[in-house]
Amino acid sequence: MTELSMEGIREALREEVKGQFEKLDGKSNDLAAMIDALKSAASDENGVIKGEIEKLSGDIEKVSDEAAEMQKKFAGLLNPTSAKSIGQQFIDSDEFKSNATTREAVKIALEIKDVTNAGNIATGVSRSVLTPEQSGDFVAPPDIDLRIRSLIPAGTTSSNSIRSIQETGFTNAAAPVAEGGTKPKSEITFGELIVPVQKIAHKFRASMEVLDDAPMLRSYIDGRGRYGLNLVEEEQLLTGNGTSPNLKGLLPQATAYDNTTIGGYTPATLVDDIRVAKLQVRKALYPASGIVLNPEDWAMIELLKDTQGAYLFSSVTTGATPRLWGLPVVLSDSITPGDFLVGAFALGAQIWDRMGLTVMASTEDGDNFSENMVTILFEKRLALEVSRPEAFVFHDASAV
Image (cartoon, rainbow, N blue to C red; front, side, top):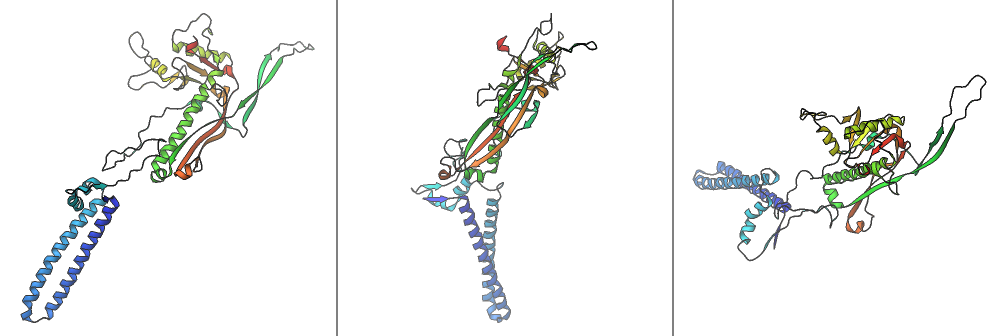
């Protein structure tokens, strides 16, 4: 059974080139010695010596040609752009040609590292039984733009919960008072709100050899790990139901949209509803600072036309900046088409980061040590405090 490898081919060629140059050096030395002898030899010996010189010159030319040919092959092997494939080199080799007609099987061993051990991250793919190919990049699913966090102020905490005091009742008895008169008494009551810090985490298990041999794969896993956390964080900030270990998101705490906010006016379109919701937030004495829409709804808004067929909000060549009624529009796949959220994000909510995005790696997880694997863990801890629910208005299309 004959087994070849790229390193074996290189080493064989290296030794053959070395041998050819050693033969060339030897022949050159013989010629130099013959010339010296010619200078000192008698004239009757010149014919014999001349014949020897011609023979040596022919040998040197032959060896030189062989060395040049071997040097060309060796240079081609080291230059991937001009070299033959491993399979082609094997087929062209004397060893293959001498064994191909026999009954003895010929084997080529090509080492192709699998991306991971059985069924962890992905399945390794060999595109050819002879010539392994590796594309220059990974084909990954596109990332979704995540922007809900950018709407909400963020702070840090060293506790496992956030305790805040909320106003729960206010009776305003303020009134003009005559000189010497009794001042009216107003009432204000407070309640305590405890918001727990929750954890978002996931992990990957990968081969240590692959991570050592493919730095690009390490970076890719790191990027996907971080994106996975941020994607779930976006969903939790918006729709988390508050049942531990979930955050309680903005939508479950927001005030329901009221289409009767403007007396005697009935909104007819989604754009109308958003304007009425902006007023509803303002009537709660909080200026709205943003709108959250599903990308489908924004597309429908951009496609609105007047009676002449002209687009109202956009140009077909440049599109439209995502803004409505003076407010920035954040497009999120975490909100259902037909729903929207209008809110005073800067005043009504606060993110508290207990632990920023953290990446840890360990060979001591499960059987990692014995299987030469490593577990890469990604996690973060945070709390979402919605201190003023009336600062957010949520339109739930399914409830209409």
